[in-house]
Length: 147
Length: 150
Image 1 (spheres, each protein chain N blue to C red):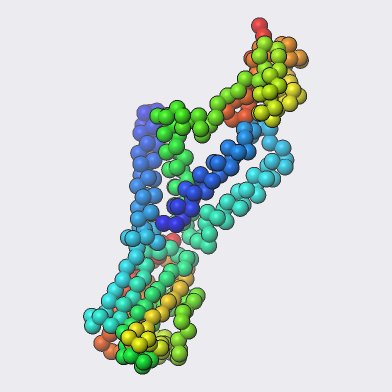
Image 2: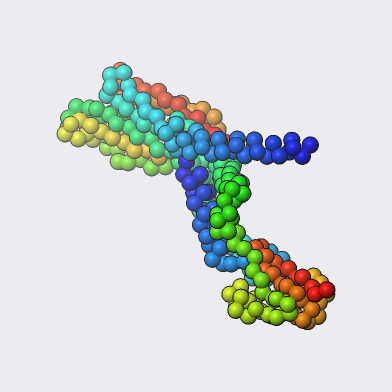
């Protein structure tokens, strides 16, 4: 019984913690981010399994995590506010060739980050060629070039 | 084909929900379904144990015996459960702890009302059913069994 409660509690705790950490796409992970994630995983594992290393316990913990995850995604389908709360929403950071600096600061993005993304995905050289740049919910920057 | 995959996913999720709810209820140990107690026929001896548990975890065994006031009371632990599992803790420390054939014989002090209690923590790596016997004198005996999931 306690392993179920532990797994569900840990899911909620991690979700809140990662909401605080903010959006960052998996592709932009630095080596340090990656090591940090590994350490977080290690610390979580201790709390999830405790001293119980039985097969049954491992299956129950995994089942709980999947049930909560799928359950939340089903709930998100029915409730827009919940989806907004859990996933956030996308943010416009460049509009018609102009950087929106206030929003970029809040999203912790620099001009270089956006230009890098623009070069990478669209082969764009300068900000004037960008119609819109949008930070998606997963932290990726989408670039829509000017015609 | 895609519809069948969707149905499989949806049914699978409901099955997982049921498993998680059953686990909360204690089907896999630690919960109302798993807590159990037996009382000997003369009512002097009561054992609270876990009906279901998992291999490699600790289980609590709580034994209460009614003896005569002020007199130490004898209790014997026996059976595959005691052989397969190791006793991690035993509270309180018995006055005497000796072997008696295949059994472990303990002598416990009693309170004014003649009650003696013993808390045990057991841990076993065994998978399957294990039976335990707790005895106090020739007429007072309880049998109980614990099922250990892998």
